[in-house]
Length: 241
Ligand SMILES: [Zn+2]
Image (cartoon, rainbow, N blue to C red; front, side, top):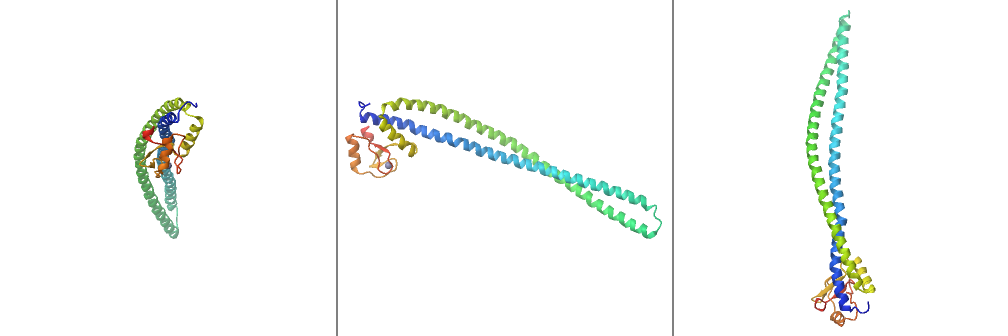
């Protein structure tokens, strides 16, 4: 390993950084994509839940209507019974009382009939809404599945590309001294996939700190790795590479 010059190792590091930059970008993408799908899924599930709520509402209205229909049948039965009794009553007072009671039953019956009609209308309105929501949901499901497929396809593509990049990486790393590689990888991990940066106009291109001229001289001397004192990234001069 000692026979590999520092300059040659810097060239290898430059190649490695090119690969690692892409690896970092693709890995970030791999982390973000499933979150996107989760969000889409959540929105889709919310829509499904709101449709379910409408269906429950429709069922409840129908139950209420059935209750009212039972009440109505009871009222009709009571009226029939009262009318039969009416013919058997002899006393005028009792007769008048019964007539009054029947009138009351009829009034109740009218109210119940109105209620039932109103509940039929409510059911129609909710059912119309349900039909509309179902159409929307079918569209949403199609859209969701399509987006999921796009993401899955892209993730496969990214994974394939990452496998190629990893193999490229494995070809480069044996050409770099272990100590230098370890230093580079440590910075890579802590500095968002960017461990090796050029100096441009006297500034570190990682953190943009202006570097003293002495740093540039140190790099030109090629005696060892030179790092930015602010961000710890390994520095190089494009013209010296
Ligand atoms: Zn820096």
